[in-house]
Length: 190
Image 1 (tube, helix red, strand yellow):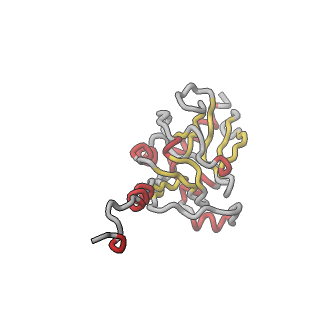
Image 2: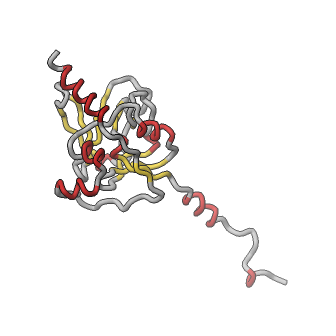
Image 3: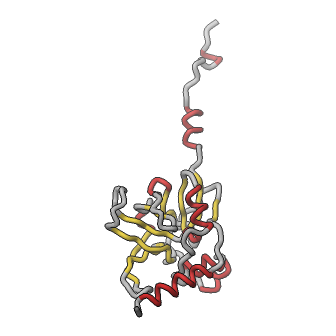
């Protein structure tokens, strides 16, 4: 029974937290080239209260909340850390695990993810952190039987992600690069 109290407290505190939407941008942020370290005052100034609670204090957003509903409706794109802009996941690794939080079967940039064991709810779990800013992202679970290439579920707090939809610029470049059916004016014969 003593192990259940920390879990109940975490769920209650998460449910009482003020929920914010996942940030969305039109353009991918510049990627950090070195670890990002800031003072607690700087983090508090740059992050929303909910992002700060999750990233810097190892919090959890409510399950099945507005951020999760937003995540489910998003099309193709890339997910970046809201704390430091490091690329973490793309919609190519996204799947619906029906757990109430954004789920991915693998990171898109493995070097930007690190894991460790935490005991915050009294049992060991594999915590997922941003390797660039050391922000808490969520947890990863294995062996749950999902039909994915890795049989892993990266269960991530959507509030600490920044979404950038895929652009069609690749298609535009292909269109621009197509050769013209007409020869240039100077090469035409009369």
